[in-house]
Image 1 (cartoon, helix red, strand yellow):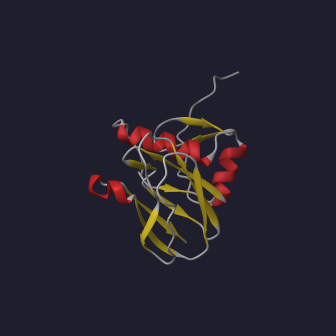
Image 2: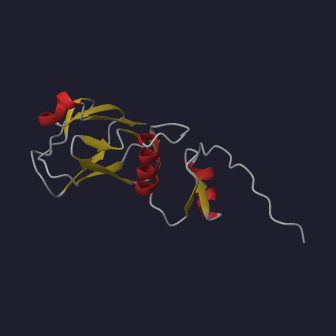
Image 3: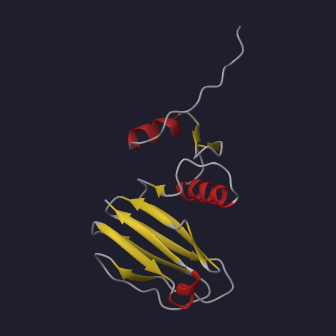
Length: 152
């Protein structure tokens, strides 16, 4: 019996391709490696963003998802990931993980919301309007604590 060969994974560019890759048990993420099929979209996004900050090669720094719920980590002076592309109707859940107080506020976009200033907890919004949401943390705006969500 010949030894198994390793092939490069194709680019995952459609929901059906993503489902197929997950059904097969692994998924290549931005050149970082293989991720178990049980990993959540949030875990995959966090690994890709972490690799990008660590200087590892990645195909793209933006995270695109077709999931219905996506988690964004609110850390001290950074949203992780900084850019998302989601389908209309997706719920975005922000989870506070830093020590400092932060807020999540839409500076510009098709709908407005503001989480209020907090140091712990979660905040979620279901994005029903298509467009680009520019989100900021007001106390840390000068430090570049911003993110962008594109809703298609």
